[in-house]
Length: 243
Image (cartoon, rainbow, N blue to C red; front, top):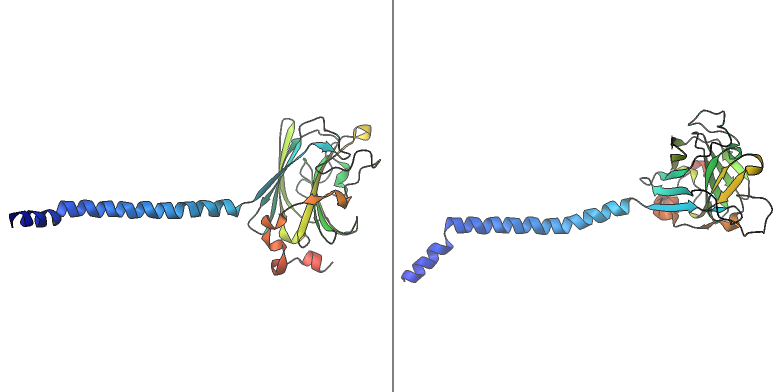
């Protein structure tokens, strides 16, 4: 009987109970953190998709003789796609006369980086970005068949030494439905020094002149991961539906 009494007192000891309660609470908190932390981390990773590209070839598949033009495509809250640029700044030709932040016609005659987005019906979006801050957005249906241009664009640039960086946000409504392919280009220089470069160039020696609208050289991109609303019933664009 004395032994039984001591056992009962040990089990009912308040300090022991308090210790057990604290240990149990800490265990529950630890388990909760283990279960929720990875899920939260995965959600953050899944919310942003990014594709990085480097232009290292001329339009006819020869190596460039300078630092590459870097282009990144980043998902932007399912309302558009962000384009990030980092490229050499040649300052040749001189800056366009247009206002930075505004569309500028024939921007391809200046120093510029370009990104094209194409679907299986040969409808495509062309976005031209200039280190001086001007831009040009073109919607085309078939080879060089322009249906809209001079559209507004959120675009800003900075220049640091011999480099320039740009950031543009392309609204989802600018893209034709169900993009499957893309290409990117860069142009700089004047006169005989005019240089045309391509992410996916044409075959060396096949053509005498550059043409960025040779759609057969575009390559596949998993665009739906960048902009899920570009496919199916979620797709809405008055720009393309009314054209």
